[in-house]
Amino acid sequence: MTGHDKHDICSNCLFEKADFFAAKIFLIRNHNIFLNQHFSGDANMTDDYVDETTEDNEEESFADLLDSYGSVSNDDIRVGDQITGDILSIGMDTVFVSTGTKIDGAVEKQELLDENREFPFKIGDSLELYVTSVSENEIRLSKALSGAGSSSQLRNAYDMSMPVEGKVRETCKGGFFVEIMNKRAFCPISQMDISFIKDPEEYVGSNFRFLIIKFEQGGKNIVVSRRKLLSIEQESAQKEFFKDHTIDSIVKGTVTKIMPYGAFVEIFPGVEGMIHISEISWSRLEKVDDGIKEGESVTVKILDIQEGKKQGQLKISLSMKQVEGDPWKNEKLAIKVGDRFKGKVKKCMDFGVFVEIEPGVEGLVHISEMSYIKRILKPEDVVSSGDEVDVVVKNIDIDHKKISLSMKDAAGDPWIDVKKKYSVGQTVEGTIESKEKFGFFISLIPGVTGLLPFSSIKKLSKPSRIERLNPGETISIEIQEINVDDRKILLGAVDSDEENKWEDYTENSNKTVSDLGEQLKKLKLTLG
Image (cartoon, rainbow, N blue to C red):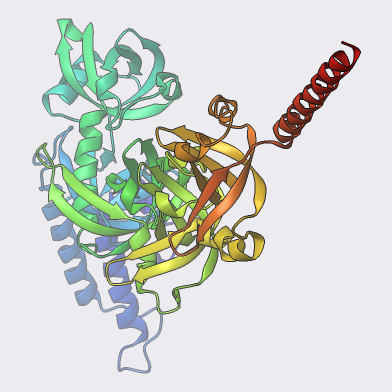
């Protein structure tokens, strides 16, 4: 070997003449000779000394190895085969993988990058790849068949279910046109993705791997599917994921889709679960997007894992709120009767409203507890969802997660000072609140209403004056009875001042006319 010591290794020359396996043997042989030379027990050995017998035997052994290696056939490996191999070494541009033969496979490192353009593998990791070419010295591997090719290659890919790489060129009726190895293929929209496609244009210009599911007329009619490959990858991902994650596991995920009934979250590539709207928050939500947004990163708890309707499909139930724990069981939750809160109306019902007084803790304000001031027929007449209201705790049952609240107690009871404000026999003004068959309900002040019976009105000299009045008009009444405990006030009708004055005037006028008549009669008798 000109320019080299016969025991030195010229790796460039070596790799030009032999493959990786031969190189390994050659390296081992020279390494052993080097050890014999420099680490022998004879301290007088020099670099020029070589045991010719040993060298001849090793050369013969090396020749035997090369002959043995050369006699090995690669007939067991064919183009299109799918193999599973471990990563042996990672180069700048190429990754070498075991193939189960004496020739290692090579795959472009670029093909193995993840969505972040990072290389996620290490030596010893297992890969599933396809054989794209086989020679005496090399086996080329790939995740999919790509580049320019013939119809026969596509036919082989179809027969062997080998993935091919394609570029989505444009949308068309019912799907997409995809360019595969300079051939045009059709991908139905249902076969482009596992999930529902909202905007087909988002896929145009992207490169994906496909399976050929129809190959007819010598390649003039090619139909491909990406969904099948994704399903295979999803199944593989699920198996890997569920090795370490089971029910009650806490995992991170990304919200992929919002639906009226909940949200879908990807918790592992190819693995999605659903959070029902009731499991998003301990607080009551009217709409899913009130508590969660598409694209948001969330932490969830796996509640249940069941077999889906389709074979190989899993139904995974998730929860966000249970990651935080039940607020009703929080030791810091200290609520007692009489406590006042400013709460938020979460839901209006016919019988009352639910008000949140602490995150995830709601109480009920019954319709009868909404106002002292006026009679409430519909809660929506007073409040709406989202309104902030003042409430007082009337009753609490932590075990059954029930709290009774009152809005009217928080506003104050107007009956407390009624006896100080009114007295029997007092004449006051009120506003007609409503007219019933038995009388009028008269509002004295907001929250305090008395009854004016028709029997009292009929005692007036002109009852029609009051009977024709309408709700909202004012009227003078007399306080006849006060019963604070039962919240009742009995009222009496009174004649107006103008009416009394007119009656007095009429009476006096009649008396004057009568006196004048008597005087005239007397004058006439005198003159006669």
